[in-house]
Image (tube, rainbow, N blue to C red; front, side, top):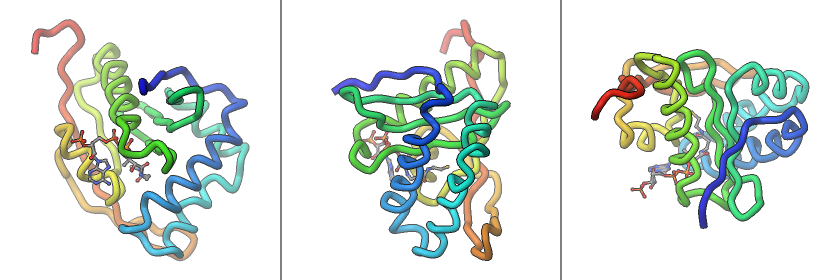
Length: 161
Ligand SMILES: CC(C)(COP(=O)(O)OP(=O)(O)OC[C@H]1O[C@@H](n2cnc3c(N)ncnc32)[C@H](O)[C@@H]1OP(=O)(O)O)[C@@H](O)C(=O)NCCC(=O)NCCS
């Protein structure tokens, strides 16, 4: 089944907030405690702020067979958010989203992309050529969550690979 991508619209906010919570709750289960996942998913509690964060970035929404399957956002030269619905995990949704963000970043002549990768996403980014730069510990609602800043050099658009 193929993945289709489209730009984010403000009306996507509520369903994407639900998708975000379910993604964190289920897909990050092996890497973060229940308390850590609750703290992480609280980023969607303030819905207007969540929508604003996505609207201010270059945000793409992925669908599979008409169902919302995931989303990703590019803020400057940083992949800010990347979340896939558990029912669509392991089907290439994140690959399609990050492929598209990398192409857009290359077209904007960005030399590199960074991301603060969760421990759940770290192998995914490493397999795409992102290199670990530093380990971080982020305080969220009294919980400490670890992530890794990773960086990938991009090939300029039009250059031969
Ligand atoms: C990480 C995440 C985005 C991956 O999404 P996905 O759509 O399942 O990824 P894909 O299907 O495109 O996977 C592509 C490749 O990465 C691998 N991969 C994906 N998630 C992985 C994981 N947690 N551990 C190891 N490998 C993983 C897949 O096996 C696949 O490899 P293959 O091409 O050899 O088969 C998803 O698990 C998720 O939303 N996690 C919870 C939220 C999160 O941590 N977001 C990142 C914040 S920085």
